[in-house]
Length: 317
Image (tube, rainbow, N blue to C red; front, side, top):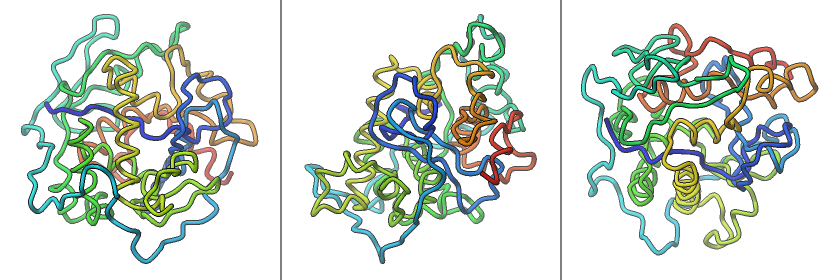
């Protein structure tokens, strides 16, 4: 079990068509994992109040190495001289949390399509099939299992190899803001495929795809600066967790535009509209907590993680 002061990085996540979710943050999180076979390709992950429906980023321009150090009050530190702030979960470890109203947590030592060390998909999605909607179990960052980022990034075939040049930033700012580094890297992997030169269709910048309003204090006006970009994202995730009273599950969902009371019908309402990708990915919380942060590729795992795959219908949109 390890600290994971959780997650929701950017203020305007791109789940952009449901105008009504009340989370008005400015960092847009665009869910895509370009390097993977995307069973849920390009998920919109944005709190849905301030954004319009957009397809995919207009460009993924890679600058020859974005500046890797932010000019902030905390000087960037190379992880070679700093111990990792995360720790690998004990072999065979599973969460011990139980919430009676959601039934048994369904945690399993091995990751399967719908179960894993951090609880089953149905348990994490508690309530979505009922009239009252999603009422997530309470689980703090101290309750969960997660992998060490540096170890993950060094393993052959790991999705985090794409992030290996930037682990210093995830480690430094994860430690500073109390967010597990692998969680920050997971967002970057989905937002930009860990390419700091990525520019989104609405001008989102860098690893964490910060919206332009979050770039006003970037060093030299360079919002792709790795240190600044990751620090700003880490701060957002930390604030989101605090605003949800430390509930990691709720915070992860809100990062994807979920909110308490969400039902399957409301989550998939945009599925038959021109903005099909404006749906909530109903497998998202499970994919994050039993996939990415455990160094498991949610898309290429056999079988793929999830059971709804409601964004698959949007692959041509």
